[in-house]
Length: 165
Length: 262
Image 1 (cartoon, each protein chain N blue to C red):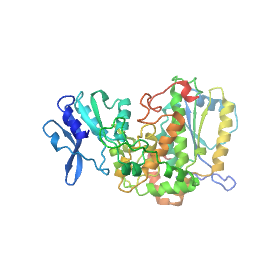
Image 2 (cartoon, chains in turn blue, brown):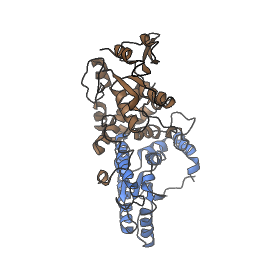
Image 3 (cartoon, each protein chain N blue to C red):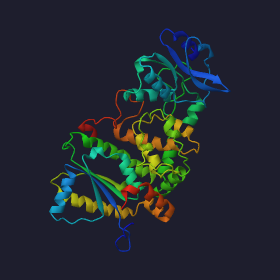
Image 4 (cartoon, one colour):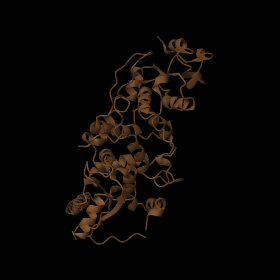
């Protein structure tokens, strides 16, 4: 069953999903870890081979499941291990961000950052900043809605059963 | 010259068949005419009867590669064919377009940017203008109300897949909407808003604003408003208008160059 959110001044903790590319950003996150840099623990990461493999569907699905913010991180433009993979990331990001804003979920819940393997400090800073930004925006309106309606919540749990603890 | 006369002239010579409309039961249905039954072809095209003819062309050409066809197209059908050709789905070399301009009434209610094809055979050209009224109205609302608006519209969805099935640009053999990991099977309404947003992001760089999805929707979900916004997003970031930028491929279908992303 769901874990109890820790007490955070009475507020629910925000949940952030981070898609990290294998070659740069995941290594950057690793560097932040081994350098013992402090950053908020609200982030769950998913390692992907290239940020260009992240389909808009994955981002939409994350929001459907009640995630409050999605971070996409990849190599800097020109440094992609697959030469042009992150060009596609950037183009897709622009479209998804604007669609989320138009629908009313809010563009500040989605962020794209280029983090290289050497930028552990930048990774920690991005997580700190983005967590602050999502906390400012509060719990995702989709999550609030299905938490108000237990039947809906059950449905989402059932639909995504293989993925939940 | 009327489309019917033009079709009579070219059938059996320039083309093997003409995809046009046949009167049936008080309305018109798409029909592939040959030299023998060309006289039964309808001469008038009522505004309320539109079909995804580009999808029919795609299927006919897939079944008979190299077949020479003529097809009656409105502005939206031509845009769809142009977009399909860029994605390798139709062969414009073997296609003769018989252009039909939409009348003022249809052009007004439909609100597309170009209610006529590049070459008009029948009908009077009426200048259109992309109707973004609803998009702007929604953008004026606070985000919470926008979400309320969309969720309440989407909640009526009966999951008939009509919007996908009628869409000229939906030609994928495997569709994300059939994917159980994204859309739970056998549940209705579908999970909201992911079901409709999947289609919305897929329409980026594709949607030619034909409006057949909204016409097909039995509930009247304002899908066109959503896809028009997506079209506007694509145009503002990439200066690309599906079906109206013939020299360029959709920015979301090619990786492109470094200039595109800096």
